[in-house]
Amino acid sequence: MSLGLVWWAAILVVAFAIIAVIIVATLATKTIVGLFKRKVGLEDVKVGWGKDTLIKTIQDSEEYWELTPTPIQTLEEMSETDLRHLLNKIAEEEVAPPVEGLGLAIAAAAILGLGALALGAYALGGPKET
Figure 1 (cartoon, one colour):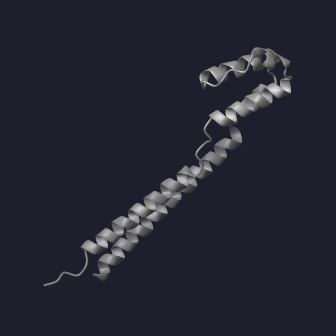
Figure 2: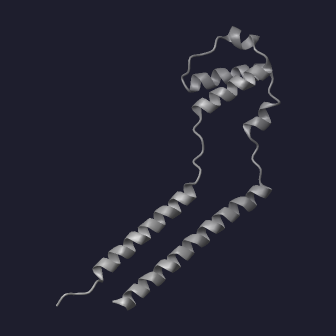
Figure 3: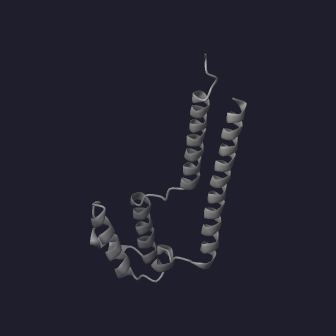
């Protein structure tokens, strides 16, 4: 009985070590790649947009997300800074934020699954009544 428990404990330790190595490798890879590869974001590009481009982008965004269109006169009266703020507001309301901690959640689920398997194996491998 105790020898079987030792084997399951060893299997769990190895499984946790493998999960830890995968998590560390994933985080390290993302960090290293992030140092050398930079994606240009909308904030970097929006600075060069003129008033006409901002107005058309706002109109296209409102049409895409089926929002109430802002009257063209209102948009034309706004400054470029105000137009950028309006576009940011639309993006914040409509674009879903990225899921953070997904890797951690997957690792936690794997650990819980392994724990459940270990408990099941322990329950099945318990002492037999004769």
